Length: 286
Image (cartoon, rainbow, N blue to C red):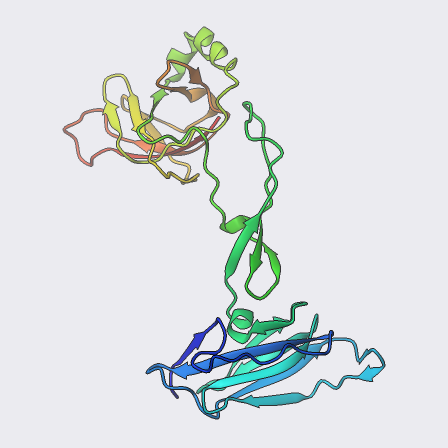
């Protein structure tokens, strides 16, 4: 069986268009099918079967039988389908491929746009653009696709923080318990910072001070929100696990924030000449 190649965008070569359907309940579905060499697929069979729709439309009975549409000498085919109905489209192959589609409420649509739909645009609403510490924000993103359908695409969208500026340096200080207890004033003051909502840190361009436990990061230009495995931290030979009170974040302007949640960890040895080399895996949301 020839490998199929599909073009969406109308007829090629003829320069003419078929008329729009007269029946307002119908949608004209068209396609131009060629093989891997660009040769039109002549007499190629596509099976169409309605699977979900009311049995009567405007006093007309509708029977859900299988129909077979065949391409002409140009590889072109067309058929009419009821708007709002669900169909099975079956392409002839070594093993027939079956696709379920829903016919949109439009006059005409390309079969390839209908079956192998792609994202055209997205839309969403944001209640606010800035957040204070411990605030959260939910965003639902909907996408319009070439098949005329709207689907939620929130899980496929990457949302970045406004603090993510190329070349901006953020510093994370590992604070041992005995030190943090002696510096409660510092940690208490950090809680008063409200203008920094999300801090994104990833394992790029960092330096480690093995004597003080200071790790400096440079935020990547397009660093996504990442979540790493919960890992241990070694400070001066003592192994501990990351907790909310164990970090203070310093920004380039001198302000600092104690994060409210941490995932990941920092791996390094107390001495720089000891293998393996340092590795940083940390994601902080303040």
